[in-house]
Length: 142
Image 1 (cartoon, one colour):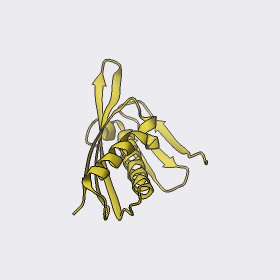
Image 2 (tube, rainbow, N blue to C red):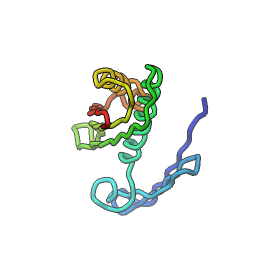
Image 3 (tube, rainbow, N blue to C red):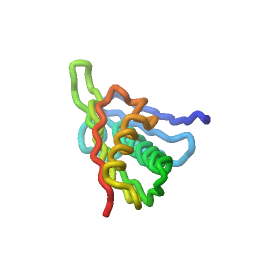
Image 4 (tube, helix red, strand yellow):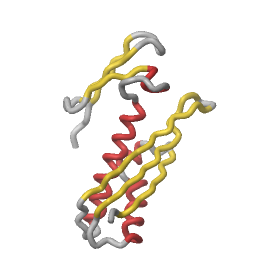
């Protein structure tokens, strides 16, 4: 399997500084700052990037699990809300809430819920983030 790469640079001190990042594939680059992470400043932040990674991984893995069960999903749309909180250990990503809606002809809601729950704990990003509470709200479209 290939190894994926990303790069980030930070310039200056924590509050006044700023940073840039880029993906090795060239598909995405951007800026981040103290303000974009802990306030409402422009740019992105590591939590949004983790949320995007978790949502993308979950959507792909659920499509794979549905396919493995004999269903052909038309769409799987997943949103992620990443919570960062100040704990005794310092700033910590404490929880990721996933909301997914899928259009999957022929699947019952019970089987869909079972496959979604299995996917919640088995997609590679979820396994990598095992210390984070991962909640799931899953529904079928239509």
